[in-house]
Image 1 (spheres, rainbow, N blue to C red):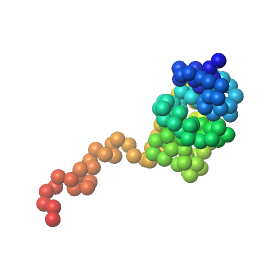
Image 2 (cartoon, rainbow, N blue to C red):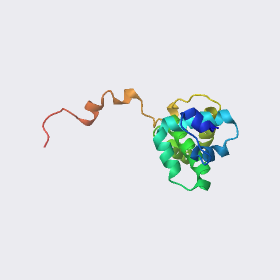
Image 3 (spheres, rainbow, N blue to C red):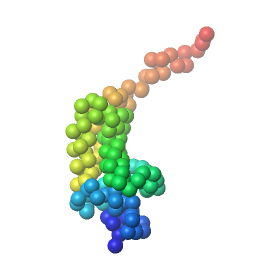
Amino acid sequence: MSCNGCRILRKGCSENCMLRQSLQCIENPQAQAHATVFVAKFFGRAGLMSFLSSVASPQRPALFQSLLFEAVGRAINPVSGAVGLLWTGNWNVCQSAVQTVLQGGTLQPLPEFSGGVSGSDFEDVGETVGVGGGGGG
């Protein structure tokens, strides 16, 4: 029988499946499926499998959890990711977002973590830095 990870990715599953080993840290079968989809969409299915195959079996659950937190961190804080959230004391935001993913929810980048730059900040960039002013020299 296929594990939840292989079932959701529609790939063959075996007794010594890397995904099955990796998902053992997530108890709920639906949460396993949601986490697998999210990580596979972020890193790509081949990328996920490549990461998992690069470590020993006992380390795979920790690696999967790390990949999940990094993918979630980048989804809500595209500039600095999970490390930026930890560094700024906002790790609880990352943890809450992981719970949202495990429950099947969707995430959006949070404006307060975009680095304080909006699209309107780039409107007059040519005038600000003197681009196109001629006479370099």
